[in-house]
Amino acid sequence: MFKYVLDPSRDFGVIPMIPLVGFFLIFIGVIVWAFLANKGYINHMSNLPFEKQISKKGEN
Image (cartoon, rainbow, N blue to C red; front, top):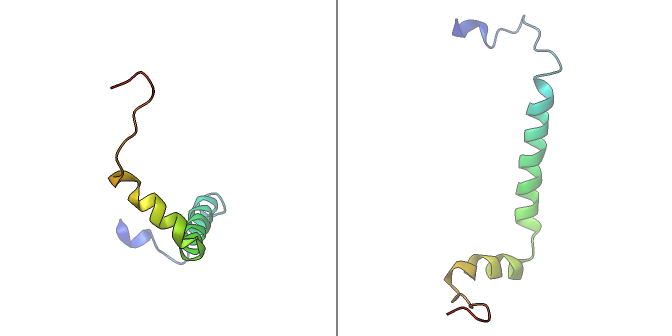
């Protein structure tokens, strides 16, 4: 059964390739964004869980 999954004689078609290409482009886009993002923004966002939570007015 598994030998037929990647059989080169089979036609994969366009429909299964569309999500594959889409996810690949999103993955590459996230990688590029991670390398080009402002380091100050990344540091600020990474420290947010450690900051003390400020309560809203009227809450204790």
